[in-house]
Image 1 (cartoon, rainbow, N blue to C red):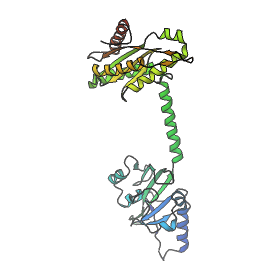
Image 2: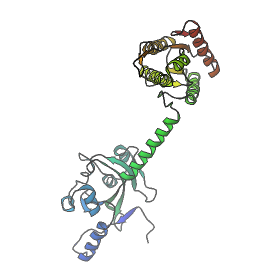
Image 3: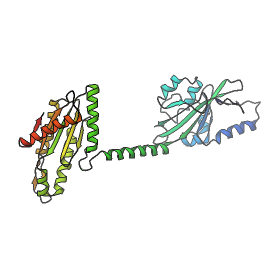
Image 4: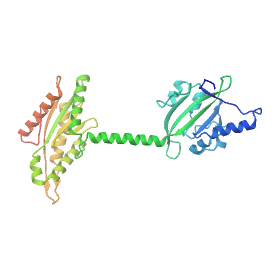
Length: 334
């Protein structure tokens, strides 16, 4: 057994070679369960096995002797991994065509392996794992290349489904189910992150506290179903008023907060007023047709140098308290 694993010795067809040997060689490649093709030194297809016929829908007799090995995988001609092996297997060329999708094999010297999604393969595209290695003669001269492929679409689908489930579970763990806003646990984490970013990178932010006015009275008068309806609607109004980078939270029963990154007081007041007027103008209709209105008091403060989580929350809370004292349904800044 040779110790060199970088290549597979290839025996070209020749009148000298017994036809039985040629038939055995053909059968050997055809019995490989993985889709496989072999190229000669001129990039011509010399073997195209049955598994690749099934994957590609292209018959062996139509592919042998051509340079169309790209057809099952791409919509226009471009090198396959085996072609790049024939051209010297330069890392730069491999990275150009398979950016962050291909690397040197850990099992076979001078071979490459990778995986990618091929939208033109099959009816709806397929995820394939592929490997390519050189074929040398007895003198070590490269006379061809072999590429094998494996359909990993089922595995990739399972991986994506698992990642999506993990994403959903994580989102659920930080989300208030009634309002769709982030919950109180996530509020404190995000406030810590905003504080750290402000101190390290001078990225200021503004903090807004909201408290629904007379919410206990509304609950007692109209029932908890109406109260939940108000909370749910207010959550939707907050979400619709925010940019992608802004964060909204329900951190208490009828208490809410917004963190506005890279936003000064003037910009925060515009957002706060938008939320306030949206709620004040909204008419809640009960099961018996009666109409209910609700308002919100808002306290706003901006990050200043030397702030801690405690100090900025104290200022926002003080501003909210002042808004309540001024008659509710208003905004106060500190």
